Length: 214
Image (cartoon, rainbow, N blue to C red; front, side, top):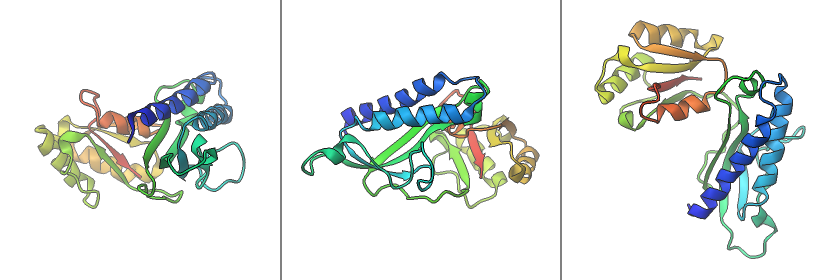
């Protein structure tokens, strides 16, 4: 993708993050989310591209939100077909409760791909398994957690009990938590917002080896 366009979209996330930052610790997640959405939408409209939200906040039912199917970007009002068309996945404020309560790891999130390259995902739960480049190709989301932990440890040339797994603290994850602990790995439970630890899993020296959950 064009580097200039990438920088333009970086500014979109910056706008949302700066706007939401005024709401950190104020106990009002709705206002924080609304501020991020408003700033992100305004910033999107300055980008010279024809964007379509394919992963967002469901169909439009109440504002403000960036909804699935929304057309966004300055390119839609420009003449000719020279402006790039892109798919957009978006969460203006991932970790709304974290922001509202003054905790770390809430972030503004967008992902961009060429037109037609993103899965147009419904608003539903999905299994997640995220690792860094060392374990790329070693994992299999169809396999049990114990199998994947062994494969990750082998790929990283360490023991399973050296691994740190991030899991959202939810009732649906009780069996997963039990299996991971029985396998010997450490667990870092988080209350909200799994995008930041997913990114951390991809970074060396972050202290996070894998994110698991639904």
